Length: 268
Image (cartoon, rainbow, N blue to C red; front, side):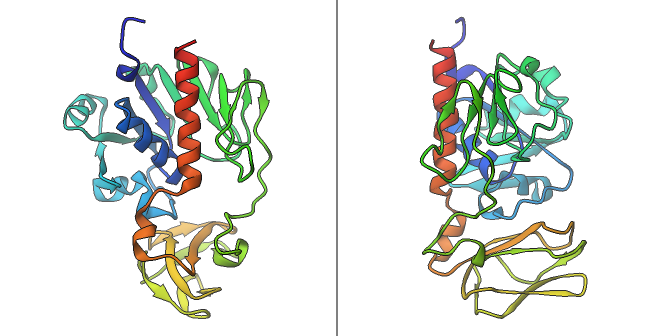
């Protein structure tokens, strides 16, 4: 190979929690990483999601900064300034300009929304909806099981259980979802402490109350139009404020699987 492995360009579809954790891991390993996002990201774990740069221009996660760019011509300068470029590009048209060696579909849509084997020399799909050899060259397991982070060479990832990560024995009890379509409104902040039963937000006329007392670990951005079933908030009864801005162990495991997949593919 004429280039060093870490000089290869990695295009990551998505800017949410998982995509950001992968971007963070690969950028620290000196890969040239670029993220794509939608015009109105709906990340809930905003403390660790680079997608916030779409709204604020920049977003820092554990010492790494992502910077919003408007065009491909800005990307090399962002890399030179030791930052991760993120561009609003829901169709991932930037791939025809960057010609990435590696494309990671980290949208976490639980289905393939358009990724193809021909998108890059190595295409990696995350979780349900991807079959190795059909939708992507390799697939990385994202389910909260013993296989979390495993690189899959043939077949598919495990089906989505819909059950949140257990924290202190609690799963669905600590997560809030919308029961209707409407405008999400909140005056709360990530890291704020709330009591059980306390109103933390609303969707239309529906008041949303904290199911348990604790720290608001994740919270959708105020003023977002949501659909029924959208994840809106997450309460952690034991966490400190600092944990809201730390990459989760699950995400680190997935990011490790992606890095392993890259090394396996290019070092074969």
